[in-house]
Image (cartoon, rainbow, N blue to C red; front, side, top):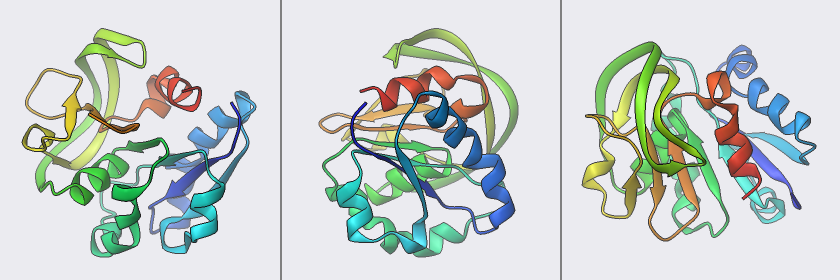
Length: 183
């Protein structure tokens, strides 16, 4: 993979970055990918210009500070390079595209039926959920949903390379992240 992947942390607490950013960083290191890490509040235009892909990481169950600062992430809608949002990152993508947050807590391992081959994953896949909120992507005309069920777990923008998972692939499905970085 050529270029640089920008990992974006949306965690308020620095300690939470060890749980939500570090595992993705480890995948990038293992794959020999050039990357940088930025807090969403510190992203500069140059960071976006130098990046060939972006991964917006998740955060802890009680950390919703990013919801008060969505204006700092409005560039997502106009960015023309691949983006992958994980949990809070997927929620941010949905909100930037006009979605609304709904409440539902899911913690633990769940079987999700992925359809249409999401980064090579198809059929029942055991995934790790850790969220209190979600965006109803079925109401957003710009996105395809890659799972069956009440809550959108895996999505892709219909015209852009923008992807999201509500579950945490860095825990159990690293091949999804590897598939994204090797697009």
